[in-house]
Length: 120
Image (cartoon, rainbow, N blue to C red; front, side, top):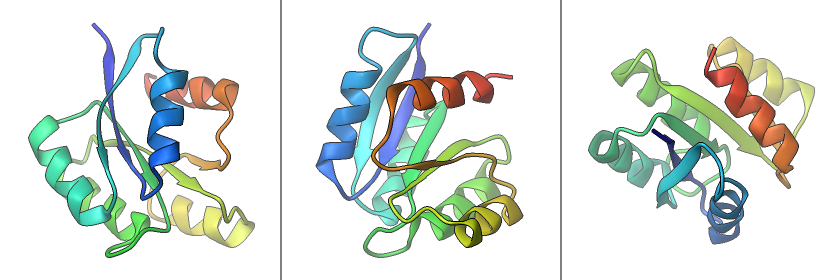
């Protein structure tokens, strides 16, 4: 059975890129949201195995969205994405208890290595 992924990113390009990357794998992108609010609704409806979440979005940002997801589901598996990748942001992500922050543009080998680590 494939692991399901919800993509929360205001860029349609990221959704299509991720969908293409995981097409012939053990993962399946089952939904896409363009804001934190929409992502929370879709998470509650679809109950994905993994959420890939951009940090900078309109409305509530990715960090706030991740915090709400973790309050609602302590076992939520979340991968953060950001085009603004620096030590301060990484420290903030780690402080929240999140383990993964990937830089944009996303690289396929980095994505699959991260997804594999989520399973353990």
